[in-house]
Length: 263
Image (cartoon, one colour):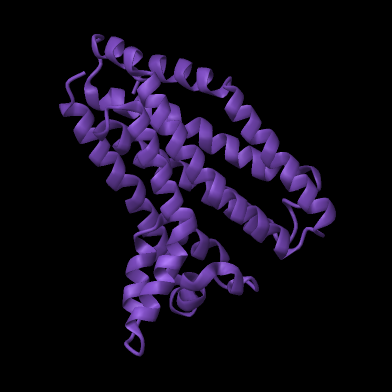
């Protein structure tokens, strides 16, 4: 760990100075402030912020993670010449990309609630859950971005794959779920829908955060169907375990390719 810190600190410091990260924080703060002032600060405001987080977080994680690894290729080659194992270097690169993004999302989402004094009220847990959900998705999508960047050497193609993955997970997925439900007709659809839910971390995060709330109707077709099945403590633990697997799986896959890749 001590050999990783001298490399990790300047990487995180450099990323935190990025203009895109500052723009992300300011955009989330401004949006949260507008919603709290004109939306009343109720459950609708939280759902609106959740929708924004579920769109912006995967986009930022996939695109920035992919581009950061490609743009830093020369630096990666230089670090590989140092007395640092490839496994540790991969951890440094991953944390250097994921941690600043997660931190920016948490700050941007919590800041408006903090200066309105809403982090100590009855809805504080849901606000904190929203920030935690966005931070978790940042780690997941950055891990997936690293898999894409490791597998696709061409920068433009890698960016295209990342954008396609974002479009499918955030825009097209509910439509695919609805199509499957229609094709199954009268057959039991709970198991197929749960499998499709597990295949999309964005859907898992949405359902996990809004389970048991009055906004269940806004969960989308997947969440509305499965809320009654996953509303128990066991269901929530299963969703948390699924998110953990979505971090671990892509990270291990990207790490394996990184260790074998000829730079």
